[in-house]
Length: 166
Image: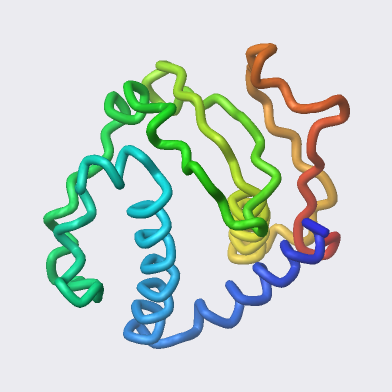
């Protein structure tokens, strides 16, 4: 199922990358609006703090000119609020979740949960990058990382496939 979704996401990337700047912005805002409404309703960190409220007018519409008023989520705040940054309810299409750990460039571990959509998007974006740089089809990609036992994937892990093998 993820293979088919990845192919669809990749096809969407190929089409949308050719849109005008305004069309891309409109498309992004449509997707971002869904995410913001979900976070405001289902993620305790955002719901309880009201951090996203600055974007919403009295009639519930988003005022994009106020985007700059939304504070950035720092790595420290994310680490300190790991549990409160997890949605209480997720749309079915985001499941299953996969726990992971990232240290980024700081070396300080941060627990993250990856949705099916984020995994699909990562594979499709990697495939597009490979095509942009004329690397041709790649069947398998190895990702080297240390994974603490509590975050280890199920036996066999995930296979990443790229265009030509999507």
